[in-house]
Length: 200
Image (cartoon, rainbow, N blue to C red; front, top):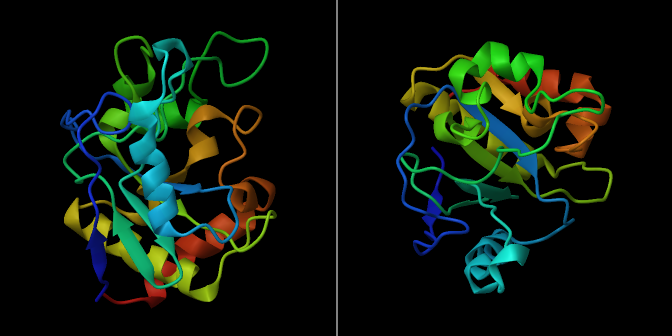
């Protein structure tokens, strides 16, 4: 049984618009890229985005959940969109395609027309806080993230094959997220395969 701290962002244009997800097709894993940063500090960063001015310097970012050690913080309800895996530029040089082939295969219409749709509309985002700049995680962060993923898979009738990490959607050249999984695909495979040994 996992314990979740509800600490929802206020509704604002930059991190929580209140828009409803169309459906949930995937759980997307991220890293905060800030070693040892608390879940509260990450949440407050998202909250503070609404204060950035002028509008042309605005950043759009958020995630549904943030995990560090035994703490899981929910920032956005699962039935709302978070800004965690959308993109505006091609996933690699030499193409006009914004999302990767695997993203287009798995998520279909949500990756085909970037100006009118986004994988944010069909996904749940989880930020994992690393212990170092390489992207390693504490045992508790790793384990609690797995339990959270299992809970969400069950909630939305998904399978382990429906788990993705950020760079699988927007491309590894453009985004190294989570760094550990990008550089060591076997670690992502281990994260997923270990789910079969866990119970919630």
